[in-house]
Image (cartoon, rainbow, N blue to C red; front, side, top):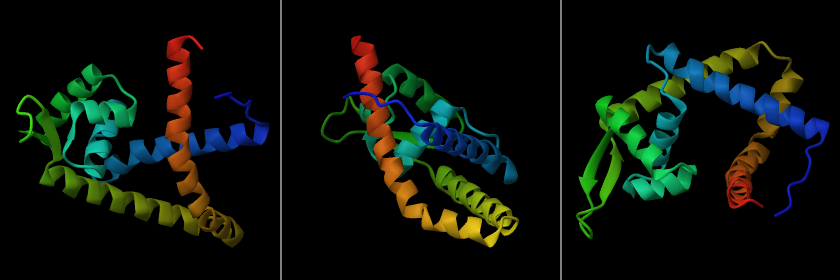
Amino acid sequence: MPVSEPTDTHRELALALHDLSWRIARFGPAQVGLEPLPASELAVLRAVIEEPGRSVSEVAAATNMQSSNVSTAVRGLMDRGLLDKRADARDRRVSLLEPTARALAERDAIENAIAGSVSAALTELPAAAVEALVAAIPALRALTTQVAPSLTGRAGAAQRGA
């Protein structure tokens, strides 16, 4: 898959989205008195919450991380009381990952804090800017689904020496 060069506008959009995402990820937990998770643990936890019952290998594939890095993140998340493991009934050698009730409650608290802070920030913007952002929600969701496969394809090509 050829990699197209980003236009200045695309680059600006990508960097603005990255900055917004980073700020939300860093400041959301702090708003409810929680310590932000390292990026690797956050990625693993989000993957498990998105689809409980995944194995370490499945989470590694979903997050484009090495299995050893996922295992390290899982240990950290288990130590924090955010993940549980259970043996797969079909293959007792495989552990399946589940979010704990604490993880789900903290996720809800963080998401509520994020929604509240973004809502407060939106009230400070001109109405036209808010309308443009709201109208962009479907496009942003579509972009979200396209980014991961796109980045994974490029990473895989780079790892193969392409």
